Amino acid sequence: MENKVEERGGWGSKFGFLMAAAGSAIGLGNLWKFPYLAAKFGGGLFVVVYLAIVVLLGFTMMLGELTIGRSTRLEQYSAYRKLNKKWGFLGALGVLSAFMILSFYSVVGGWVLKYIFTFLTGGVKGDPGAFFGTFSGSVGEPIFWHALFMIATLLIVLGGISGGIEKASKIMMPLLFLFLIILVVRVLTLPGAGAGVAYYLKPNFANFSLDVVVKAMGQVFFSLSLGMGTLVTYGSYLNGTEDLQENALTIPALDTLAALLAGLAIVPAVVAFGMDLDAGPKLLFITLPKIFDSMPLGGIFGLMFFVLVFFAAVTSSISLLEVPVAWVVDSKGWTRKKAVFFFATVCWVIGIGASLSLGVWDMKFLPNMGLFDTLDYLTSNIMLPLGGLLMSLFYTFAWGYEAPIAEIKKGSTFSLQSFWKLSMMVLVPIMMAVLFLTQMGILKL
Ligand code: TRP
Image (tube, rainbow, N blue to C red; front, side):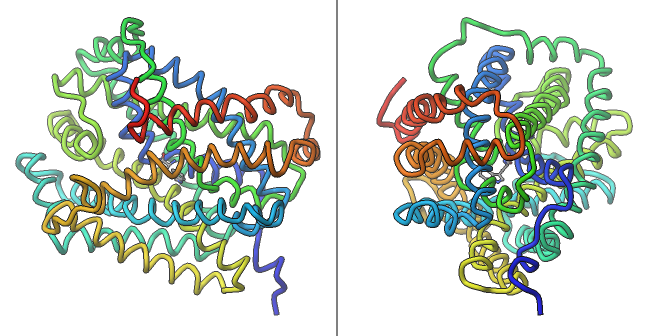
C-alpha cells in the first residue's frame, strides 16, 4: 500500500521543476500572440513595456503563487482553505479556469498534430487558407486530432509528477529551444529579413498609449500561466529547499526569451515574404505554411516548426490538466488514474463543442461568440485577471506577509523582499484593476 505522500509525488530535481514550470509558461501564447502584438504595437516599444511588466507583475505574482503552493504542499483549493477557511473559492475559481482553458487549448493542439502529419506527408498542397478553413471548419477530422492531442496529454500526466510531467518537460523544452534557434538562424539569412527585424524591434514611441500597457499586461498573464494557480499546484510539489526568488526570476526570463525568439523567427519571415501579420490561428496555420511552401527546404523547416509548437502546447496542456487532477487526488482521495481519465474525457467532450463552434455549430454563448471564443474570452479577459487581483487581496487581507516571507527565506536569502511586498500590496491590485476594468469595457483608454 502506498501512503498518501508517496502517491502525491514530487519533483525529482531542481532542473526538472524549472523545465516543467517553463514548459507550462511557454506555449501557444508565446508563439502566436507575442510576435503579433509586438509587431502591431510599436515593435521594440511593446517589447520594452512587456519586459517592464514581466519584472513588476510577472515576478511578483509568480513568487506569490509558488509560495502558496510550497508552504502548504496541497493543491490550490485545499491550499487556500488551509491558509484561510474563507478563501477556498479562489482555488475553486482556478480549477474551473484550468478546465475551461484546456477545453479549447487542446483543440488547437489537435490542429498542430494535423499539421505535423501534413508536413510529414508532403506539406500543405494548394492554398493554405482554403486548406485551413476546410479542415478547422469540418466535423470529424479536427475531433480526431483533438482526441490524439488529449491522449498525449493524458499519458504524460498519468505518469505523475516526476515520472510524467517532469520527464517530458526535460526532453521537450531543450529541444524546443534548439529548434527555435535553428529557425531563427534560417529566417535571418533570408533575403529581406533585415527590414523585418527592424520592423519588429525598432521602437516606435509615437505608438505609446495606455492601451499598449493593458495589452502587454494581459499577455504577461496568459503567457506566464498566472492567475489560476498552475504555479500553486506546481509549487506544491517542491520540497522546501529551493530558491523561490531565483525561480520566479528564471521562469519568466525563459518565457520571455522564447517569446522574443519566436518573434525573431516569425516577424522577419512574414515581412520578407510581404505578407500580413495576422493574430491567432491565421498566422500559424495559414501565413507560415505559405512561407514554408516557398522556402528552400521549407518542408523540413515546416515540420520542425510544428514539432516545436507541439512541444510548447503539450507542456502547457499537461500543466492545465494537472490542476483539476491534483484537486481531486488531494481533496477527494481519487487515484491519479481515475482523475486523469475523468478530466481528460470531460475536457475532450467540451472541446468537441468548441471545435464544432468554428464550423457547423452556430450557437452563441456571448454576443457573437461561439463556444470556442467564449471559453477563450471568459478565461483570458476576465477569470485570470480576477484571479490575480484576488490573490493579491488574499495576501494583504487574509494571509499577511510574515509567513510567506519566512517560507521564501527557507530556501534562500530574499533580497527583493521589500520590492515584492510593495508590489503585491500596491502595484498588482492597481494594475489588475485597470486591466480588469478595460477588459470588461467599463474603463475606456
Ligand atoms: N502559458 C501558456 C501559453 O502561453 C498557456 C497556459 C498554460 C496558461 N497554463 C496556463 C495560461 C494557466 C493561463 C493560465 O500558451
